[in-house]
Length: 304
Length: 193
Image (cartoon, rainbow over all chains, first blue to last red; front, side, top):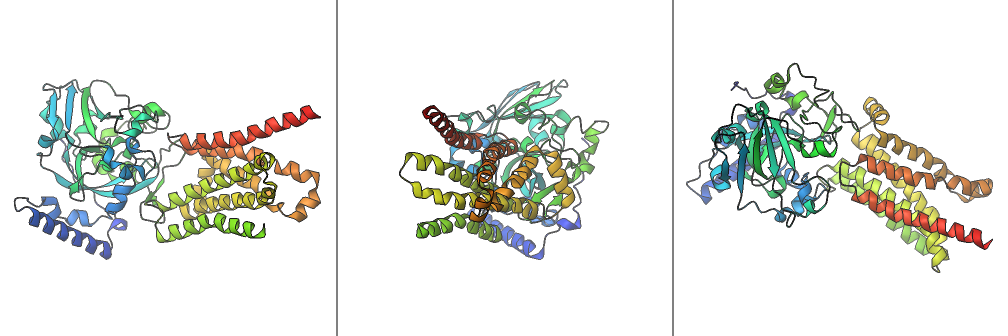
C-alpha cells in the first residue's frame, strides 16, 4: 500500500473566522452532547485533532442533507430529504461475493464496529456543483480485506438496495434498478476511498445513503454509490448504472477533470454550494498528488 | 375587465418577486442560482401554455373576454424567458464571456435557448396595438412564430435533462393537445367552406 499524505489546501479555501468559530462551537456542542449522553463514548480522534478539518470551507449540514441526488427517493434535489423515511437503514447487511476466499454477509452492527475517522473531502458533482463534506468512515480496503480478495480480482462492483415496494423512485424506469457502481481494484484499495457511515459526526441520514455508502473524492459524485447491500469482486469491468443509461456522457472512470467535458456542458468550473462566483475545477478534484499515479499512461479523454 | 387584467398582472408578476427575493435572501434552495434558473424557465413555459390556451378556451366556452388577456400572458412568457436568460448570464456565469461563448457553441440546448430569445424579440416588440395596425395581415403571420417557439422550447427542456423526462413529456402532451385542437378546428372550418 503506497503511503498517502493528505492534500494541502490552497489559501483560497481557508475558512473565514466566522465559520471557524461556528465550527468550534459545533464541535464543543457535539462533544458536550456526546459526553453527557454516554460517558463510555470516546470522542473520535479526528474531532479532537481538528487542525486539518478547520482549514476547509465545510458546507452547511442543512445543505448537505437537503440537496441530494438519490433517485430512489425522487429525482428532484429536495426529494430525498422529504422522502427519507422510505429507506429504512435497519436491519441491514452487506453481502460480499465473487473473487474472494471468504464470501459472506456482514451485518451493519459488525460494520459499525470498524473504527472510523473524520475525513473532510471535496465532493464534485458531474452537474457542476460541489460541496465540502466532513465524512465519518473507514477505508474501503479495511472491509474488503476481511473477505480476502483473490489475486484474479481486478474490479469491484457495488449495488444499492433494491426495494421498489418502499423506494417509490424504483417504480419508474429512470435508471435500471438497482443502482450499480464499480471501481478498479487499485482504486478500491486506495486509502482515500472511504466507506462512509456518518457526516458531521452524526449517523448518515437516508438521503445521504444510510447506513453505508461509498466516497471516492477524486471522482464525480455519482460514483459514490449509496445504501450499499452487495459487493462483488470481478475479473472484468462491471457495467455501471449511469454508463448504461448514457455511455457517451458518463464513463466508467468519471475522474474529475476540468479538461474533459461532458458532451452537454464544460467541466472547467463549478459552483460551490453557498458561493456566488464559480470556482475553477481541479484535476482529480484536487487529489492529483494522491491519485494521478493510478492513471499514468492512460488517455484520460478516452477513459473518461 | 380592467380590474381582472390588473389582478392577473399582479398574480403573474408575483413569481418573479418571489424568485428575486428568494435568490437574494437564499430561501429558494441550497443551489439558489440553479433554482432561480430552473424556476424562471418553468414559469416561462407555463405562460407559453397559458397563451396558447386562450384560443381554444374562447372557441369552446363563453369566455370571449379572455382574448384580451392573450397579449398580457404572451408578454409574461417573454418576461420570464428574459428572467431565465438573466439568471444564466448574470447569476450563473456572471459575465464570464469566454465560458458563455463555449457554453453556447458546444451545447445544443443553449443554442436553442438563444434562438428562442431571438425569435421572441420581434413578437414582444410588435405586441402593441400600433404595430398590429401597422402590420395588418402580416402581424398574424409573424405571430405564428409561436408555433416554432413551442417545439424549440420543448427541445431545450429535453436536452438539458439527465434522466427523468416526466416534466417535459407532460408539457409536450398538454401543449400538444392545444395544438391538436387547432388542427381539428382548421380542418372543420375548411370542410364548412
